[in-house]
View 1 (cartoon, rainbow, N blue to C red):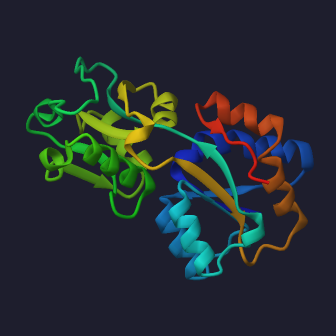
View 2 (cartoon, rainbow, N blue to C red):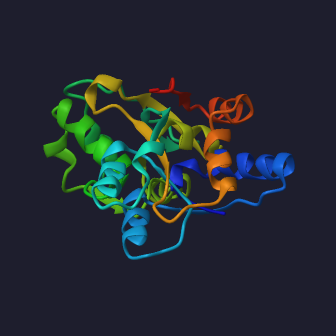
Length: 232
């Protein structure tokens, strides 16, 4: 069974997939990348049984193109975005209108996932626009193919600040959270999962259902995700 999953899910799914195999004997292979990259790979015929998107827009993209089974789509998780810095950084900022974010960058750049194609980047841009900070930093970005790549730039000190998911920052001891963006500043962060059009194995459906199990929920919550109530 192959799962296409957003890069920000790696820490959680790397724990959940082996637990599912221990319980059921079914092996789960997870391919991680930016959500947009995965959606386009599905569109090009790449084999996968589940698509786990970091936002609803890319799941809608997959639905419109018939790449996933509409009756299996589930908005499973919520998350937050944060401003992160290297662990030893002393920068202190509050994310409010007028925050001197550009000045805090000095001569360096702000690490973000691609603000057009990657959900974390789109959330970051929306939040910065809501705060009135976007014009001051729009030309000061280093954009990455997924949010974990942005996190690595911060961890290595190659960027003094970055905008990543709260769960990413929590999973990386090399960074610290400077401040959390208020959730009203950007569209709701909802991770959605569905069986792909080609998926037909009972094991795939079982894994989709198992993602709602108490065992999986405990892992997601330990990583900082919010498990959303079922829509149906």
